Structures are given as C-alpha cells and as structure tokens.
Amino acid sequence: MLIKIARNPYYNILLEVCIRLFFVCSLATFHSLKLKGNEQQIVIHWTTETDLTSSILLKDRNGVNLDSGSSSNGDGTLATLGYFDLATNSNPFTGTWIPLTFGTRLGDSSSGYGFADGTFGFTTVFTKNSNVVSVYPNEPANYNVNSGITIVTNAPPANHPIAIRFYDRMITGPSARYNTVTGPQWKWPAFSSGVPSNLYLKISNATPPSGSTWNYGSTFEDSDHNFSTFLQVKANLTASVSTGGSLNPDPTGAHDYDSLIALNAVPTNIHWEFVQWTGSGVTDSSIANT
Image (cartoon, rainbow, N blue to C red):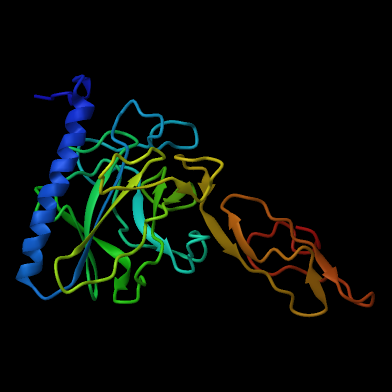
C-alpha cells in the first residue's frame, strides 16, 4: 500500500517533529559511539527548511524544486557538505572546493523513504584520520560516503568556514548547475577527547527560534540567485605560444563548460607571422583567429 503522507494537512508539522526527534536520538547514539572506541569524531547535522509551502526550498535554474528522486535513498540531486581551502570569514568562497560528503543526495533519509523535492536532512559523522563518513549512523538506512580528504587535526582546520553545495544533477559533470551556501556560525569544530562535537546547520534566511541549536545560513556563492542553482561547472583552459607571439586576450583560466572562447594569435614582431595551431578541436589550424 502506498501512503501519500504529503496529503496529510499535518505532514509538515510531523516531518519537523520527526527530524527534531531523530537528531535528539542521534545525539545519544553518538555518546555511546565515543565510549566504544578511541577515535575522535565530529558530528554535523545539516538540513533545509522542511515546510513544503516555504518559498525558500532549493530550486533549479528554472525555479523547480530540486529533484529528490524516488522513495529510496541515493537517486536525488547531489548535495555536498564541504569547504573552500582558502576561505576566510570575509570571503568564504575562496580557493578550491573540497567536498567532505561526496555522494549525499536530496531525498536521502534515515528511514530510506526520503525527503520531498527541494529538501534534505543529514546527520554525518566524521572520524579523525579517516576519509569514510557515516551518514545516518545506526539507523535503518545508514550508509557511508567518502570525503575528498582524510580528516586530520588541521584538515579542515578548526574554525575554518564550511559550506553546503547543492546541484541540479546527480553528478558534477558539464551539464550540472550549482550554488553554495554558508552562514556566519558555519565553522568546522575542533576534535575533542570527550563527547563528539555536534554542529547544526540549516539553510534558511529566517530568524532561529529562541534557544534553537540550529545555525541558520543564507550567504550564497551566487548571491543573485539565492536558494537556486545558476552557477555552471567550470573547466580550466591553458594555451601557450611556442615562440614569437602571444594570445590576445590570454584565455588561461576557468571557463564555463560549453562556452566559446575566442583565441587570437598575435606576432610580437613585424618580422614574424602566424604558422598554425596544434592540438585538438581547431576547425582550421592555419587561421590565426579561432
């Protein structure tokens, strides 16, 4: 029998209560985990707004809620916790993006029955000196994903800005669009020898209720398109001149996939002339402009 919970007028309230109860139960679980071993751990809970009538659910470039897939885990659009290696408090989106939970997707849940389109809620456990991240530990639909790095004391550094990147595809390939969001209190906790640190992150521009443990964040990498995926995955282009000339303009750098880059070979001396382009993808290798 298929029960469409979304049609229940109390669905949003029940969902919020379930999320809160899960996180409270999870906290007790992590206490016991710490007592069983010597590995230091960090626990990060991260979520979106869960009210399905909210205007700030995550959307694609066309304004459609991001696809959470079917009713099982693992087939929604990608959502990744991570950080920029050169990030600062004043510019949290500087440097190379390093995913810490590559493989977490919208729709995943601790039960396996999934979240609605445009929403998610994760509990992730990071263990020192490991690149394996536990998602929904000790729950019916728990699974592991890999981090882009091995988590150690200074990687990420304590109090380094962290962020959430969400895509409109299941992969990060050329067709994917994305956005990245952070908040003022979204900082990587330090490892401790006692109970694992628990950090609560929520993508929202609302005001947290009094006494809430959630740290709200709504600072977006693409601030012109908050809560939606407009940034395009980029590729690095390199071009060089063997001798006697230059490229004007120099195209070296990151460019959007599928974009056209004009290359103009310019001799640096009137006694030199252009000979040819070498490499793949050139329509006519004998023309200076391509």
